[in-house]
Length: 103
Image (cartoon, rainbow, N blue to C red):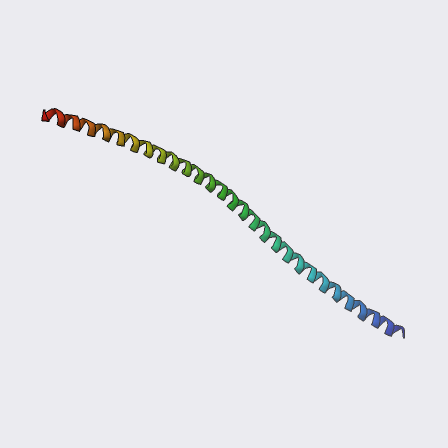
């Protein structure tokens, strides 16, 4: 009878031992999965931060280029006004020259 109890207890101990090993193995796999996921999240977060910084830099460049374009547009407008005024002056001088040569 004692031998049977010892054998049953040994079998139960072996079953629990293998159950514990299986549980530890499962926990290790879950930890490895969590670690992989965390590494992937950190990598994606770093990429997001990098893209955010690049976006900010590009937005600043766009604003600077828009300002340059506006300044160029204003300069062109001013040049056109000066050109129009000079053309009027030139036309007036031509008219005066023609009147002087006709007399």
